[in-house]
Length: 97
Image (cartoon, rainbow, N blue to C red):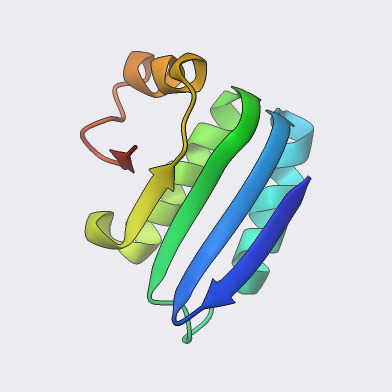
């Protein structure tokens, strides 16, 4: 499940469950539909996420490239999901908390 909220130029994407290849396809489509001129910053809220696939990592990388490192962040990451970002060596490229 995904929820997209735009507030004061910040697009917060709230995800839950397993972000596998199938759900990542839907996320990619929805994210592109929500990125517009009004959006100045993007936050991925992973508080309720228990698993991420390489497809979701590609979405994160594409979003960083689109917005810029300083305007993209991932928040509320569990230790298990953080480990995936660490193994993929993305903790330098993406602001994760």
